[in-house]
Length: 202
Image (cartoon, rainbow, N blue to C red):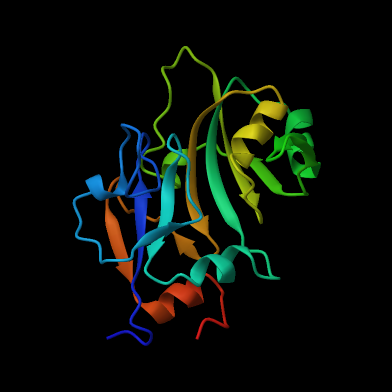
C-alpha cells in the first residue's frame, strides 16, 4: 500500500483521443486504452485531442494544485512539428514572447521561454515521424513553465507557421521515455513527486 493510498500513472496519449473518460461527443477516450484504471482516476494537465505524449493520471485530487497552481513553476517540454522552415528571427520571437489570444478574448504576451530546432526528433519521441519529404517541416523543442489553453499551438501560429504535431515529452524529470503510444506506466508515489520536484505533497 502506498503512503496515501493514491495511485499515479503516466500514459503516452495518442492523437485523436481526449484527456477524459467520459464525453458527449464521439471521440477517443482514455477508457478506450487497454488498461484497468482504478476508480476515481482523472487526468492532470490535459492535452487537447490532437496533441500527443506525456499525460498524468491519478486518483489524488491535490496534484493539480501542487503541480500547476503552486508558487514554483514547473517545466514542461514539447516536441513540435511545424510546416516550413522556421527562421532565426521567428525563433527569437518565440523565445522573447509573442501575443496570443487567451480565455475571455484577451491578448496575452507569452513569457520568455526556451526554443531550439531539433534535427533528430526520433531521439526524443518514437512517434515523431515526418511528413512526406516534399513538405518542408521544422521540429522545435519548446520548454515552458506555464500552459494556457492551446498555448504552444497559438505561439506557433503567431509566427505564421502551422502546427502539424505536438508531443509533450516531459514535465520536470517525469519523462515519456520509450513508452509506446497508448501504453500506461504506474509510478510509485514517492518517485512520482520526486520526479515532479514537489516537496510538500504529504
